[in-house]
Length: 118
Image (cartoon, rainbow, N blue to C red):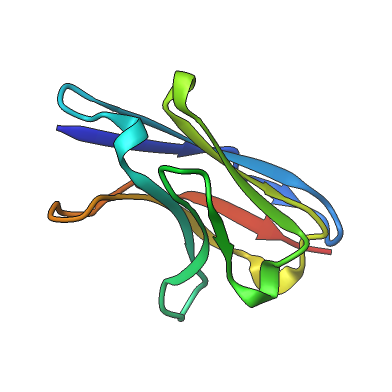
């Protein structure tokens, strides 16, 4: 069984910063073998990609967050992070962590809620 547990979501004012964490665990889960990603789902909208980081450390970002968000992973801690700066009200959403690997099912966390309000 694989578990992804997100944390760090809270209320924040526009322009503020947050760091989200996603801790991965599992008897057969080898963190370094999985590409990791952050996604978000705003109320009434579909889930969308925010950022991904590969097993080799390559990163990819959705256009709206480029230059403001940074994804990183700590293999020793089995954790992936999302540093979010200059947050905007429209980025209010539940943020989800995903682990993926070719020929395997995707694993999702339960999400952490980020609310950007003024």
